[in-house]
Length: 258
Image 1: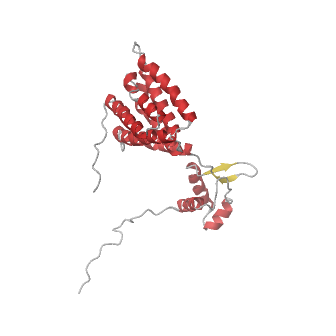
Image 2: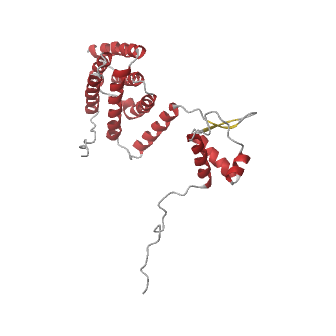
Image 3: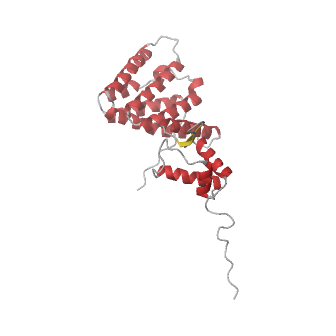
């Protein structure tokens, strides 16, 4: 009996990515960092020693180190005592990476403005909630100062009003609120979102100041009273007004899975 034909194991295409030699070396070095064997500031062995350790050529090691350097994982120092060292990691690097990723995604349309704003909404609600629970006296003083400036803008009904100045004041408030939340990751994400919001709407900011700053003072008041639920509610109203005036629609909410 003739055996039944069997499809190739991978159907001609591997189901996983095969890393090049430089990327394998780069991955191994990153693994050492993640496992704590290499710490920020540690100097890596020389290119010759790395080539010997990994059993590859110097050009392969050099390509791996260049990839790690481009990603900010290692830094190179020249002169005596130089060479490649493990970077001192900062969330500023994350802010830059997230900003670039979102900006490129919007340009190539793999991400839409409503999708970006949907995620921003959840992060802002978290900031409002956390700020109400953790705000320090210093951060509250900063929010109080912004509250006074916002009150002046809102009560100044006489034209001309400057929509762009209100837009910048709103972003300044959101950054201060993220600082008050006392979570460096939130601050990092907020920094990225502010840059993207400038790219999307900053040059053509046209929302009237009263609308742009609507319910912001209610958020600050809730933070002042340490009322996290009220802070979230006020932030939700503020963001809804902003989206409506920009004539954008967030993706429809899906019911939670049973």
